[in-house]
Amino acid sequence: MMNNKVLTILLIGSLLMLLAACSQNTDVSVEKDPKDTIIDNEPNEEQNNPDAEEDPVVEEEVIVLPSQELQKGDQGEEILVLQKALTKIGYEISPSKVYDLETVWAITDFQIQSDELWITGIYDEQTKLALEGFLDKESTITPGEGLPLLEEEYLDDDTVVIGNPYEVLSLVNKQHALPAEYVPSDLVIPEVRFPFVEDVPKKQMRKVAADALEKMFTDADKESLDLFAQSGYRSYERQDVLFASYVSNHGEEQANNFSARPGESEHQSGLTMDVTSPHVNYALVVEFGETEEGIWIEEHAADYGFIIRYPKGKEAITGYQYEPWHLRYVGVKAATEIMERKITLEEYIEEILTN
Image (cartoon, rainbow, N blue to C red; front, side):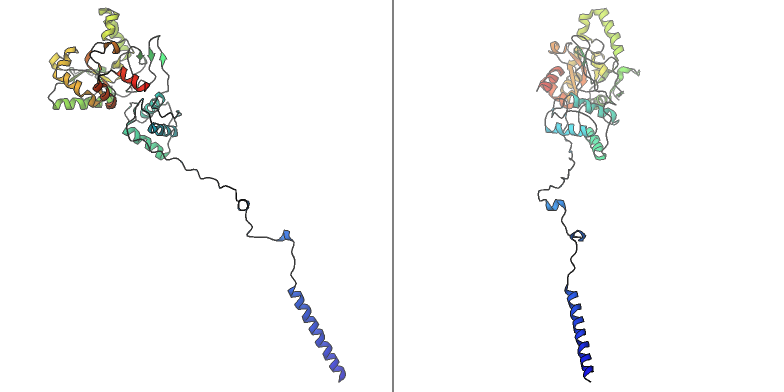
């Protein structure tokens, strides 16, 4: 009996010791090698370095093209915006804030390559819209494909050959000649009256000038005036023949007062039209300036972008006699100032390039 009690006590003691050992094993933490520990929320290098800067987000500059008309000699911030736009579509021009000869060339070349634009070298509303189209589509152009960038070259000691003959503000005179090979690519026949019916080259003008001439004739008709177009485009070769004939009949010195040497004639530019009326028997004579048509022309030519190229009293500057019939297209902006101030194209160009 006694042995059974002892055995029971021993069993209970062993059980208690076993339970105590298990409890101790449960409370013991197992230490791991730090190298085996994965920490999910460890900050990265940039979080550890408060001085680290985020990469800046570069926003592309939005170019808002000028809304006003711009031309050679203009200056200001709007010119810089225009030059940036031209650079973005492929022209490598210097940002100068001046509508310089390089900018004139880029605009002219762009207009030539854009078939629907008038070729003038002047930044106008239609050119603005065409440029915006290129910028919106991120299109580029091949510079010089329409008009190579050429420097003016001296023909002789006194005369330079114009590098950009398409510009409507190009100065053509005895010191500035058109290239012998220059034939405007945009010649058309304006829908106006001529005192002859033959389809000859002298009926032609460049598109921008022809359109302006048509508007002028339409308005002259409303005033019951009898305007006729007499002589427009004339090639280098044709001018050579005419000048040689005048020299033969009048001598070179006298001939050079009323006719131009080949290359120096504005008629080759395609921007000129001689006009006349029945009141002077369709002739090109100074008396035309005294007719109703001649007086109206002097008062209103600038409204359409034309000037009387060889005005009275300016012979020493232009090098030619007074010609009230000789109209030259330069654009409304320039024509208005020239005619209102009664100056010549020579004086106007000198001022805008030196101011």
